[in-house]
Structure formats: structure tokens, C-alpha cells
Length: 294
Image (cartoon, rainbow, N blue to C red; front, side):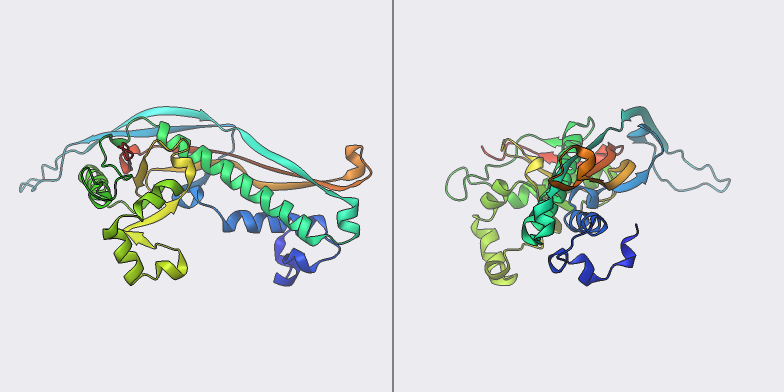
């Protein structure tokens, strides 16, 4: 059922004592789409298969030059390597009990909806960032400065590290990086440097908002999936340029009546599933800087 038949009041599930499956499904989709991280960095391409074949870009040979009177256009050779990946479905279900719906326990149901949507998004982000880090051909800087030392001998230099990553992407692709992805631990270390802290506190109201809009021209995205074991690394990339998400089935919520599950105390069981696979076909737009813990 299309969500367009519902008003904003309807979709505010906490105002509905009689929470119906279409409203729960619509709310899951709304929460999920509102919190996307990885998907905002990649374009989505619909596919009608359980696998995707793609061409991974290699080095570009040749260059632009002046033309002679007869033309003599120089050649640009875009080398590619053909690859393929399986597209696997993923998801989980949660139950809304008869009592939760009968007694209008909207807060309890609301938490189930939000947690289900956030976990779907988190799983997908882990999938995307693992694919980014595991792709061959990305630019790597293994000797970043020590972000755990914000003063004294051996003091780190986050600005120089990020500028180096930007330069490497620019020199290879002739295009600018747009985003930096870091874990919450690395973000905390970065904000302890006086050169950054003074700027944040004095110009962007960081103390009041807790939000850092950008750093050296890069949008800041905080996601622990980029450094799950806190080895000390960050990722700089160009948004919507390094790859896409091959999607066979978008986020889908299927409601099954509790009686069909064999448990009469379940009002409905909500299955959430998606079928998508990240494809990184232009790794030259990604730079991972590591060694940031000394």
C-alpha cells in the first residue's frame, strides 16, 4: 500500500492507538531513509538479478594536448577489469504482540520500529564500508601522523593528513574529494587539537550544537564501520563517484498475522528485508589514511 494515502499525523505512530501494519511499514521506511549514511555516498542502480557484473576502472593512459591543423586527436585509454559480485538478501523480523497493540503501547512499538530501521541501516553501512576498505586499487597512506598526541614532541597534524589525502585524489583524478569518514573515537581525538578546537569553539558554535559541518572543505561523517577495531584510520573520498549500490530489492516490510506464526499472542510479525550489494568500480576516488595512533 502506498504511504501517500496517510497524512503526517497518521505516520506519527505515537498518535495511533490502533497501529495497523501499513502504518508500521511506512514508519520503518521513514526512519530508515532519514538515517542513511552509506547510501548517501553511493548512487543506487536497480538490477534484476541476484548478481552484478561491472567494470572496475584502472589507470588512464594518454592526456589532452594541442591539436594539429589536420586534427590528430591524442588518445585517452580507459583500462577496465571485469568483475562480478553476488547480491545477497539480508534482514530480520520483529513481533508486535496482541497486548502491545490492544493496549496502544505506542512507545514500546515505536522503539521496536526505530531499532529495526537503525539496525538495517547499520548492517548496510557495515557492508558498504567493508567493501570500500577491501577494494584493491584505493590510495593508501600508511604513515599518517599521531592523532593521540595533541601537543608536545611527536604531535599529530590532522590538517596535513587530510590535505595529503585530498591531494592524492586530486592528482590522480583531477577532481576534488568531498567527504571524510571517521570513527567516533578518531573524531574525539581530532577535536582535542588546539588548532581545530579554537576554530570550532569560536566560529561554528560547536559547544552549542555539537556539529562540525566541515573540515578543510570535507564533509565530516562519523561511522565506526570505517574503523571497527580502532586501528587509527580515516577515509577520504569523492561522493557519488567511487561506486554504486546494486539493488535488486529495496527495503521491504512484509507483515504476517500472528496466527500464521503459530502464536496467538502475536498480533503481527514484521519481516524487513533488502537485497543490495555495494560495487566500488572507481577506487581511485578513495584514500585511506592509517597509522593515526602512532
